[in-house]
Image (tube, helix red, strand yellow):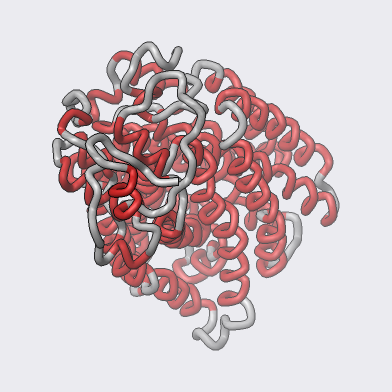
Length: 492
């Protein structure tokens, strides 16, 4: 089937536009010309390449998120610090991530998604190399804050650009695939990686005082390659059109419709997909807009849900090796167990990818939160043997990752193009703050009641998440324009 544009004959269109997928069923509100063009372009090799470039950056994000917890015992030994100081390393990284999200979101909405993504990884690489060379605890703290800033905007800007590049019918499932790389494969691979470099390769890399330094170097250097290949990433046509750059938006759409990765570098004949008539109403691009009117209600609801969900995830990823060591397991065993548990994360992200294309956002998030609460209580009450720790840990991680993935899918669907990256950064940034604060609360409950106390706290967080998600708007099956630009299209 070929795409025939106004003013073109069917034969002319067939010679300039490659074979593309059939359009989806009519949306609740008429799609814009841009939305209709993306729906007709469908999904092909170019979209696969775009997702691969985004997933590569998020893979490093996942490894960095888990690094402090995995290398915690070695960092404590090298710098002579305790659990509180180690937790502070995690906290400054998370706070840096919050700053990075806010800066990245602003850059993405003002100067472009692609610009923000390239800057993110360059700052991350610099911070990682400084971490490797840290001569004292204070220098390590500063370097981890820089790493956090670099990685902060990676995920939310990636969500924004992917949401704006793909057809409505594919949007939910493809957004969820980003978390398959980050929270699924990334979590499993990260603990396998740490188990390798801190175990069998530990002496080769110089022993306990040097192996963690080489680990930071290994994590930082490959990110430069991702930056190199991202120069071919097409800019969001929605962003370009919102800035009145019609010709640039058509160039981006032709890249997406080219059907070949080589089309990202060298375009053939081009088609005019959109015109000046498709330019959306001019809106302010400011963080203040995220906290006004309908946007404020959405920010409050999904932001509260993100606090509970991401706070629980970061707490467990950071504390799990410490919790297992406290039960008498060695560092190597605790890393291996944590890696096995994260098979549940991969399965949860895959389940979310499936459901995101087939089920409403609100009911999926609420159901996963209820089941996550139950699984946390079960872990606290029953995980007393190695087998039960692994099985119940996998089940808990399944629902944790399903929740985080669905909230990640939901967040860029809440805001108009002018503040989409900033809005997603705020919502996910609230989760960042939770990741900085909740490990301290978890340590209190750990000292009070052991592992059971930590999971009891998480169970309460998930119960509150159910309440927060109830107030989120339903965006499933709607184009971004229908969900965010037309007030009558989506009930709040």
